[in-house]
Image (cartoon, rainbow, N blue to C red):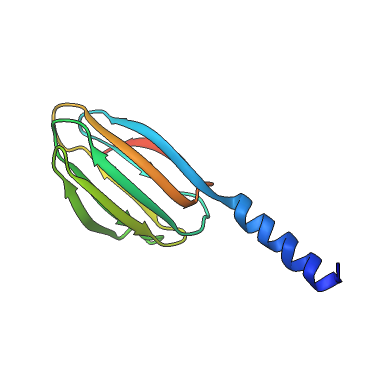
Length: 118
């Protein structure tokens, strides 16, 4: 194999290894938010289905802290959102009951994940 082909093959393998899919159930306590991607990362897509009985607000948060509302997932609703590199996906439960989502994350899955109070 020629050196250039070896380099391209190696780069392709590295890129594929950093991309993947995560499937998970997500429970968000009352009055809390789940934050995905507060670290340095590439772009990713989240598909979410609201399996619970309370609405969940989906927001994106830029590096400067600016939040943009993307959707409100009513019970039974499904949404798919693309998030740019170094953008935080925020799933907000503003109700007094717990929320449940089924999520699939594709793209860069090397993401920090955690809960925060509103």
